[in-house]
Image 1 (cartoon, rainbow, N blue to C red):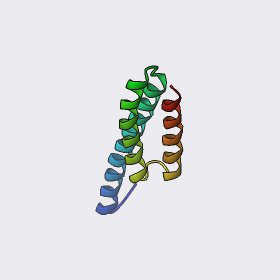
Image 2: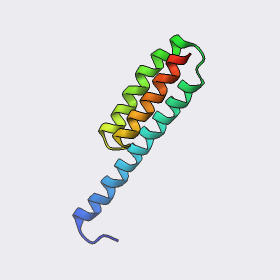
Image 3: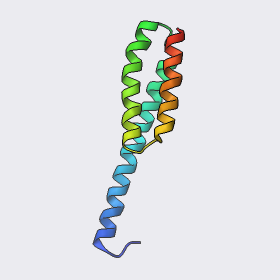
Length: 83
């Protein structure tokens, strides 16, 4: 267990950030899953805009790697184009 006040604060902050990152990541994964299940092109195009923004935000905050974000966006764009 931590002995210093600053270490205790760091533990609290780390846990808060971990939960926030976990929530954002899970929300994005669910949005990707919903997009993949969409069959109408018009709906998929509108969802794609939101999902790309979510993925970009994850990459910006270092929750996922920037190359993984690029791969996800590329695959989803191809998917929507093929509908």
